[in-house]
Length: 71
Image (cartoon, rainbow, N blue to C red; front, side, top):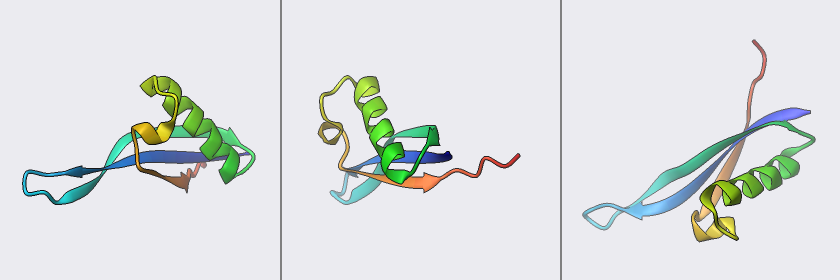
């Protein structure tokens, strides 16, 4: 099993109209068989936390990175 951090991003314009890549929420999945499973679990959790039916109603994209669990 592997651990991942999935960050959900939106493009938010500033006062000058320039878009910025802003993290809406970061979710850590501590046990997943692979990247695809981690993303699916994070999407489900994101939708529940944001109380929305589809993740892409609140974010435009996501990024997934492995977590180093060595202590």
